[in-house]
Image (tube, rainbow, N blue to C red; front, side, top):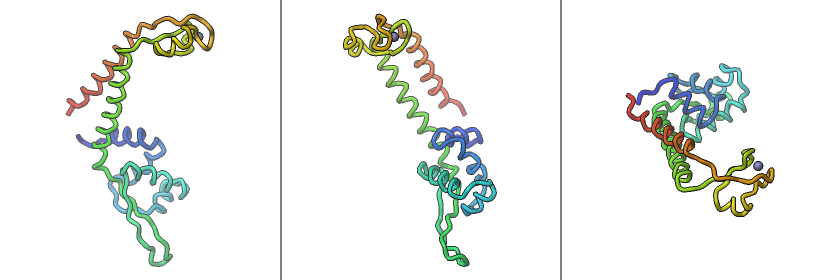
Length: 168
Ligand SMILES: [Zn+2]
């Protein structure tokens, strides 16, 4: 899988948030950039810069090297964007989404769900019995919901995500 700008954006947004994009694209193609330089170049506060960098680090999207500044005598972190990890994280995110969708599909396929006509709350059979099939919110009778469309939607999403594998 080729690492495109779009791929980087998707992964960073999903795992860390949109606010991290500037830093990532600033670091892209550079090596060992001091966090003070990043903060200055992007006009960000140093605390905010570090906060975002540490959050990126949690997912190994960036890495750092600590070095003592010879003149000032304190430690400075120099950061790198770990671009090769992006395709791996893309895969990981997709697999997690697929697992959730499949789990949800299995639940929908074997369960019965109940809903009042005001759609206050949706619950499974066990829960609906507890409430005597009366909606706890509005008191209306809860009927079994036809979840064919939900099932179809889930199957479609799974198919779409799986098909992305086939793309070059
Ligand atoms: Zn209701």
